[in-house]
Image 1 (cartoon, rainbow, N blue to C red):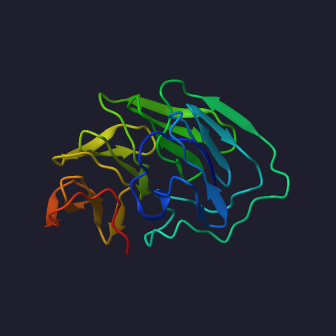
Image 2: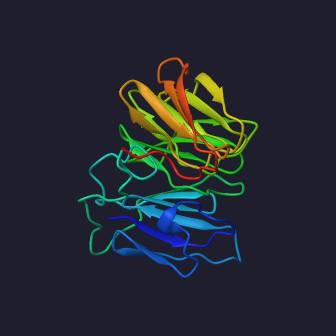
Length: 224
């Protein structure tokens, strides 16, 4: 089950998450108000709160490799929270905090924050595996596929990182902010931009395969 709680001072930008009075998501409640820039998110086993990542044990058994969990963007899982979750670990990463949730893949938690940090944390121990700092910031969740972490920044660049080390493999510049987690189709990664374009890039190289122009801003990601 997905538990979201806390406050943000900016639009979340996607569909049913815009309601300022709270909208039920997967059976629980997202509450948004304008008095703080804090967003606290518990994704079954993971909690992000104003620069802190925490882990609740016995709550997660499956990967969550993109912002809304799967290619269909359902934001749903058959897993459930335990009756009485207990905090196993907590990691304070400092800075301005997070505007989007972490993902889980291959026994690691991956997250990106407003200060331009991208980090990998061991799911069981809470120890940082690696962290990189980029000269930008992030408002969208990463996405993971086949050993590569893909994350778009608010300058409009999609970064492809080695999930084992954080080393950048390639990057691709769109013209405006990327607000949503990427998705995948075949050997391509799909990413949207506020310039109104949906891009299909070769996952291994970042080479543009095609783009579709909508003529309007895109703040949500592609779903399949």
